[in-house]
Length: 264
Image 1 (cartoon, rainbow, N blue to C red):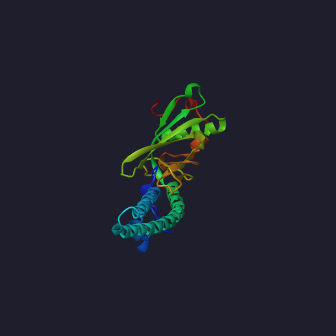
Image 2: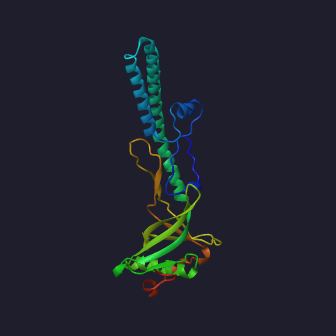
Image 3: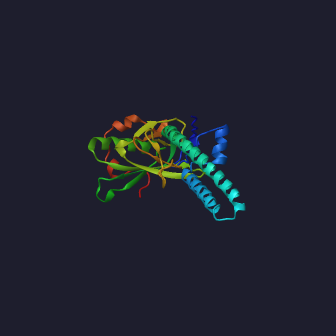
């Protein structure tokens, strides 16, 4: 079964497509059943309406003059056959959709795990202080900020003191609009990596993230997904501003009492 993955589709929710089909199967699915998206609940409702119309035609055949009975019986029979064919096709397509959905979500999750998002803002707040502590914003394109941040992270890993990190990053929506999402972690949980020397931005990646199917009002296959940005978080900064030796130095007093950038 062919599953298409495209990096530009990496966003908070994705529409789940129908599996690719050709020839007779495509004709049946598109024109006989009327499925262009996985709206199986709606397709079954249409089937019920057609079945009711057939029953009404059969009942009406006993209530009208004899001249109208044969046409109504014919209509009822045709509608009955159509309902049988339609239900059979829907069941087959739904079984295929369930199998395809699992493969498609797994493939899109792999794309999500390998995709890097540009970091818009990186802020740290001491959550062990009374009142929540001051929130500091670090510029991950500045060597001084990254150095202080690495020292602070190493100090927190050694002391058990924790800071809450908020990382805001950008992604493209379905219509091409630039949107902003955010994740929260404790500072010691993050992994900082050196990136490209010429990269003017910092990047975030979620190697354990995955897409999950969004539950619908019925038990039929889902129509959309949502992302779960779980597990490890990798932050890539420019090679020119990253010095791993900074993380092994003794934290300074400013690491817990003040910080670079603006505060709020």
